[in-house]
Image (tube, rainbow, N blue to C red):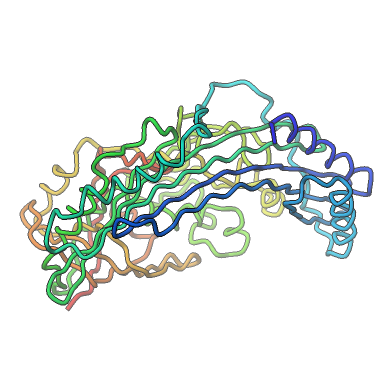
Length: 439
């Protein structure tokens, strides 16, 4: 379905909903194409391709709200029945005065830079090239070390296109593409089976790092040889940049309007207050060219804005959509993150480690949980013991416990090694006084 066809169908569905009893309506039509190839032992284990089109409709009927969805887009009579039944069903729901479309003045109306979030050559990539990429990962590893037990290589890609229209004036569309390569390697170490993975991703296929993915996974697995627990202690924790999001995610969740309204946030009434050290500094920037989270408007059609959400440890913004803005009597901005950019420091990972007399460099989180209301957390970790600035021993099956209210206040160093394979652009972090449980 072309963009013009999606746009026309979305407008028709919106008008049909209004004609049949909806006071307001918002319609999204999306189509996605994806493929995945996974190989192991020089054989294809998974070869999958999917193409799907969907229509989502937000219905506002007699102060009531519902969201309906269908994948049957080619039968107008079926769509008519679908919309009528959706409106009928909505009338059975409880009234909710806070459910409305956004103020039209907040909508994106066009303009701004081309954010370059889609690869125009996505549909031109031949299946054989995808298969070869997966096998290429495996071939980098096979036969390189006698301790190798298994190697898995995989390639995946995805295209998403969406148009959206709202009955109070919004029209917009956006496209995204994504490619990734992943290697997983396990090795023998006595009775233990250390394993590791590595992946690369990109918006554009010709920018995808295709060499070295398997080699990096093997290197990381071999580094795990001889891993063991160490004695429990309170130590500095250095977090690998690709894992920093695990520590930030509960904070962002606690900043969300739904969490605040449901009393499931440890940041209630904390706007304008200090929640971390001066090094805790994050900007939400939707306008990074080819950023993984770049976009001109959010899922409501509201124009995105660059904003400083945490500045020198002070909480500056919550994430508030239209609905929770009304319920909480707060000014809405957007309920979604775009590209979260952590202000980097001036040292690389080697420099961060050099400052550690004794600590643990965390390269993996294994299970665990956090309490959104209190900020308490407990996670399993693996990584390396660091002494006098040098990595001396792989460690595993240890746990960390603490509270997010304190953790970010104990942030003592930030690296310059920003991880760019994500919409959350975070560097390595050093956090003091972490309680590690071992033997």
